[in-house]
Length: 155
Image 1 (cartoon, helix red, strand yellow):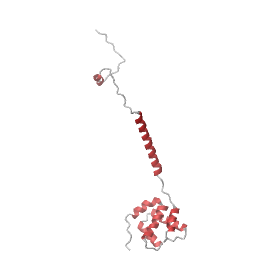
Image 2 (cartoon, helix red, strand yellow):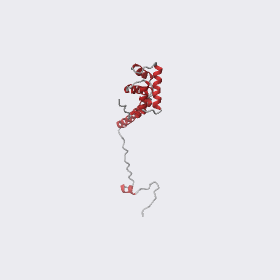
Image 3 (cartoon, one colour):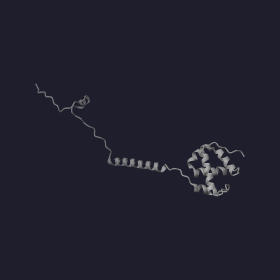
Image 4 (cartoon, one colour):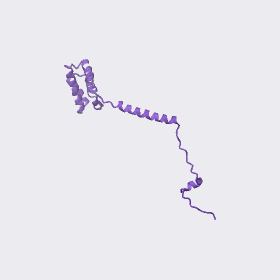
């Protein structure tokens, strides 16, 4: 009879390992990418991150008021006859206040026409446009929403 000894250095095998052949643990080599592919992937990721960061930084610019542009637009154009630059700015700021308080475009047009004693729809809309675009650009969307369905009075 053969001498049977228990070997403690053996590890338990699964039935799959037994089917593959006892003790033959063939590990699959890990698939690695060539160096140039890794460098290219890293470069593309870095470039993407940089472009995203630049877009976020430059794309989020706050709208700012430009009183000089407003003054040039409304004092050079005939028809408004403001006494001075302070009066022009005060009127533009009043328009901005009315927009921010929810005033409708039709009300604004009516107010400007009454204040300047004109029936000219374009002259009124021009002043409103310049005041909001240059003095309170944050209110542009609100003004556009208010003017969406505005129709001038037949005249």
